[in-house]
Image (tube, rainbow over all chains, first blue to last red; front, side):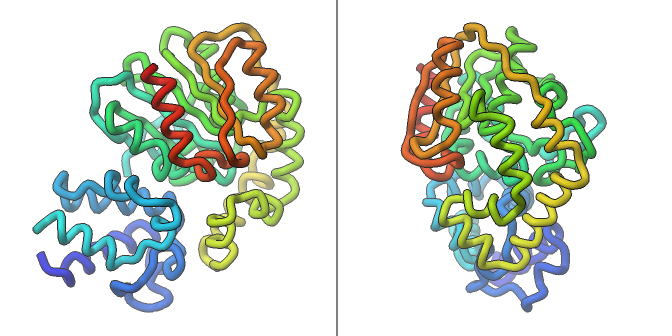
Length: 91
Length: 246
């Protein structure tokens, strides 16, 4: 699966969880941050992790990945970091 | 979304982990809290060795809104319905979630093995302070958040708006404040297997210390305020694991 395909899935999942309003500032890019740019709520991020887990299966351990990060790293997380993580797991 | 129904309300539930240790159920605090409080803190640490169930309380997070039922008896009844499929489990609660956990353990002593009460607003620093805090409005609540979260929320439009909407809904459109105000003080009789944890800078600490002594619970203090799961994220997770596995 390519970078672009994973990005597309992340974007679709975000819209399913938070609605179209999440794209109000423009399309989601690799540099988009979940907190600063999208203003995703923490509970929405939980829902996103669950959705992506269902989509990609056990190869991708979102909870383990997130729990290994400091809080400020989680707050500063970008779409690109998430896509890169998924890509690595699927490789 | 993983969901279970309790008292007719669809609750958002997340289960993590499959280990063989006694399962644990984690309850969050009112208004600002959601299951994310635990999902990004101690939840995954506990899930390394056991099944962890986290859920959004009624009217919070992605659980359905409810006009009433924020008293600990009703919330303990929700908890009862959300855990029917579990064997004996441990319970961890933050703030009001700690009082719900305590109430549940008193009502169902055979179903709970150990309890961790984090920053439970116990007498005398309890319900009255909490209602004043909530009635003071979103700005005052934001002020009490840890710096990292406050900056994130205050800098943004969407998050701030959603938080304010949620606070206004809970405070104006539900019985939440009245439920807190009329909540009876918890029973003060010895209870085994309990650990109470407070922040050294928390206004709940003094009441918690007296309560812990009165029921014979272990009492621990970590550096931080009321949102101790954020202020002392790693230390709190370690304390909880040690208490549950010790």
